[in-house]
Length: 238
Image 1 (cartoon, rainbow, N blue to C red):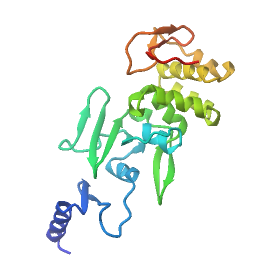
Image 2 (image 1 turned 135 degrees about the vertical axis):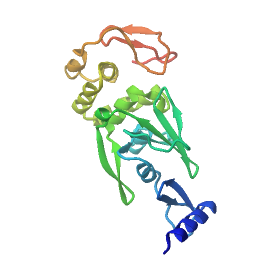
Image 3 (image 1 turned 180 degrees about the horizontal axis):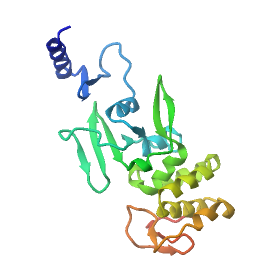
C-alpha cells in the first residue's frame, strides 16, 4: 500500500472520528467503531509516554482503596509526554494534561530517582505499570490535590493500614525526603501503628515545622514529635 494512500486514509478516519491520533504514527480506534472493544484508558496513557506508570487517584481506585471514581487518568512520568501544540502545563505542579475521546489524561513529571514503587498489573488483556499500594499512598502525602484532597488520603490509610507493607512504605519515604517521612510518621501514629515501627521516621532530622497538607495554608497546631504543622482546617482526627 502506497505511503500517500495510508496517510490519506488515516486523515479521513481521523476526521470522521473513527480513530484518534495519540502522537506521530500512533492512533487509537474510537469506542464507537462497530464491533471494536474500547481500548482501556490505562493502555492509552501508557502509549503516550514512556517510561510512565498509572498513579495517584487512578492507582488508589485500581487498588480498591477508594470508592470515589476519578474523573481523569493520572500518570507519573519522567518525560514531557505530549507536543507543545496540545499540552496544558501547570507550572507549580509540573503536570501536563491532554483530552482524548472525552477523557482527560494528566501526567505528573518527576525526577528519575523518584521513579520507583511500580509494578506491572493485568488490566484486561494487557499489562500496565501502576504504582503499588504503598507508593500510591506515599504520593498522596506529597500531592493530595491529585487524589481529590487530603481527607481521601487519610481515609485510605485508616481503612487499609492492616493490609499495607509498612516496612516498604517507610523505606519509600526515606528514599524521597524528610518531609514525606515526617508526614508518614504523623499519619501512621494517628491510625494506630505501634511506636516501635515509627522509630526510623521519628529519627529523621529536619529543620523547622512543615505543613501536613501541602495544598493548605501555613497555620494550625504544631506537632513537636513529627515537626508537622497540622493545617487541616475544619477537620479533626483522633
